[in-house]
Image (tube, rainbow, N blue to C red):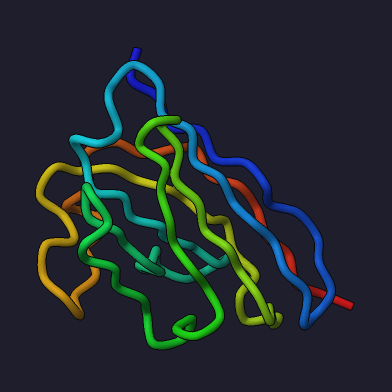
Length: 128
């Protein structure tokens, strides 16, 4: 069974950090690019970051560049999103997604509609 499972979300104070993990099962993650997306209440799902199959292409949304870092460990079938200097505007449910054709072009984030596999999300709340 193909599955992506996010973990690591929670409540954090402004300025704090969280590390999200995305665990893949039922398929080999190194055949897929990974995207992290987020969706705040009442808003559309938006791309946060993506990383190509071997990590040669990495892109970030302007709102998180310099604060978030995406990475992957293909040997462990895991991907990560390190989030630093969090602010209340980062509050959302964060999703990881996988697709074979995403994140091939530098400077471009994939559309949510273009991703094949999705996790169920992990909530992140930034509040004092």
